[in-house]
Image (tube, rainbow, N blue to C red; front, side):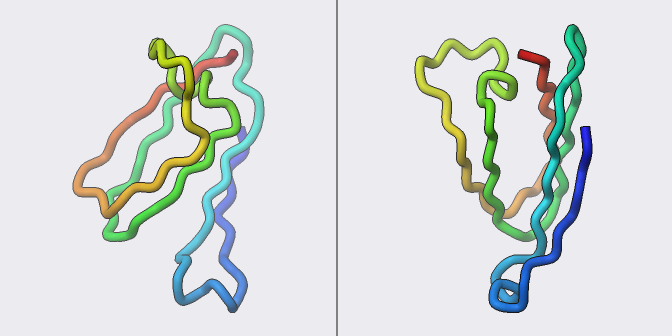
Length: 82
């Protein structure tokens, strides 16, 4: 997995602090744990493959985009190879 923090261009800088990008393949039979950060900023999460993120949930439709507000606690999410 590769991680990047990208600064927005000048037109977005007043509204967007930064973009975080994580991409890559999860090796077969393995999982990766993501940890959130506690901060005072809202955020948006885009997930290309929701089935890898929402393991064990039996919803017919899984969302690709989520919005969240300021966080007051960390959370961990374990993703597995699909």
